[in-house]
Amino acid sequence: MIIDVHAHWGPWFFTGLDTSNLTVMDRYGIDLAIVSATEAVTYDPAAGNRALARFLATAPDRLLGYVTVHPRRLDEAERDLREFLPTRRFVGAKIHTDYTGSPIKSPQVRDALTMLADLDCPTLVHTWDTSVLDLAQHCADLPRLRAIAGHMAAGGYRHAIAAARSCDRLYLEPSWSHGLAGRMDEVLAAVDPRQLLLGTDATLIDPAATFGILAAARPTPETAERIAWRNAADLFRCIE
Amino acid sequence: MPDPFDPRPLLDGLTVSVDIDVLIGQFPDRPGPSGDPAAVRAMLTDRGVTGAAVADLRAALFDLGSPAPFPGGIAVGTLDLRDPIGSATHLEGLISAGIRAIRFFPDEQGVQPDFPAVRHLARLAADAGLILLSGGDVRRFWRPYAGLDATVVFLDTHFYHLGDFLLVAADEPGFHTSTRLLTSPDGLEQVTARVGAQRLLFGSRAPFYEPYVPLLRLATSALSADEKRLVAGGNAGRLLGVTG
Image (cartoon, rainbow over all chains, first blue to last red):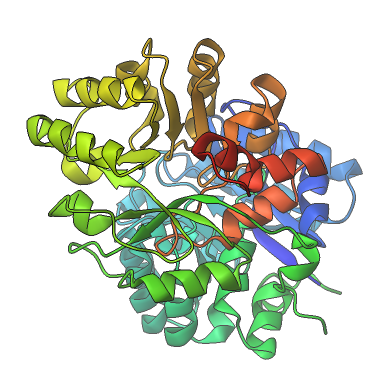
């Protein structure tokens, strides 16, 4: 069993990105992917969330959804969360800080995370460099918040290690188009394996990026199982 | 439970005869591997990479000197874009020594594509029939190499910029790209469909980047077995004049 906690559904604006979710998943034996709508992430959360809901209504059950939350449009976000989370085809929320112009330390993101914590909704947040430390601070301040540091801060992965060590409700997933050698080894050595998840950023990034660094890092069988699916199943309660 | 991250089933026996982007030495401004040649060789061997075009960071960052030895590797000469006069002289020595490829490190040397040194040294290298391995953003670094009838391998082509590479590659038959950052689900297939698999060269930037990443991307791609062999060393062997 392999669960990808960071995936997308929908078209991208870069040249030639048109491989379907299931095709990408099948290349690597990914059984289940949790996707956000690219339209929701990059342009219009309300329209994208609805498009994804329509797609998931007839899509294979290998795909589950994130409700994309725009921190500066919280009324819309709360409406979408209350509409889509009860369907159980949506199992979490996604916040992209760059596309929404909302730094993690901003009061708008804090308000969004407060709402999501109150809803007991696991939340994937785009993190880059030092911003993961701000996410850890939100986790410390909001006792019910369970957050995934998307990309585990990319080149700032050492900040992600520090962040994860400061709060056991902060999870890391390693997707990044740059397969920096040794990055995953350091994370495995320093972070509780119960806080590690598998994310790919497909269909933007091929799972080769994540699988390649995990292949090199060679986690123990127990940790590999936790990363591959067990932690995600516990976090999202998505395996009946 | 089988190891979900065992690469062998995905690789299906794919190996690489030439990795076009391997470094020895180290970066003084960042943590990372020492770049010791024996350790780099061990990393490549473990990943199934049997041959490599190897450049030396000491040459790029401090002293051009002579290409450092790397047993079993193809030595890549380095020029310093901060010193076009001295590098032109150095290039003559590299040519006399039989070097087949040189590498530009514009990012590491703080050089922009419109600096006169870039086009000047590229022209000298092209006129000598050398292969130019170039770092830098392909959207800007195509320009100093255009119109020189140069054979260039862009080492930093990110899939975000693939459309621009394809545009310039259509006009410049000598333009090639490394696979290192073509980590989208479609990048290798796009290059193959539009300009041909002969323009793709496996590159990893070991030991700083993980070779399994481009290796898995290639192995799981929709390229045919023959196309994969070209990418995995056939093209590099042809350009560098070695059998893969």
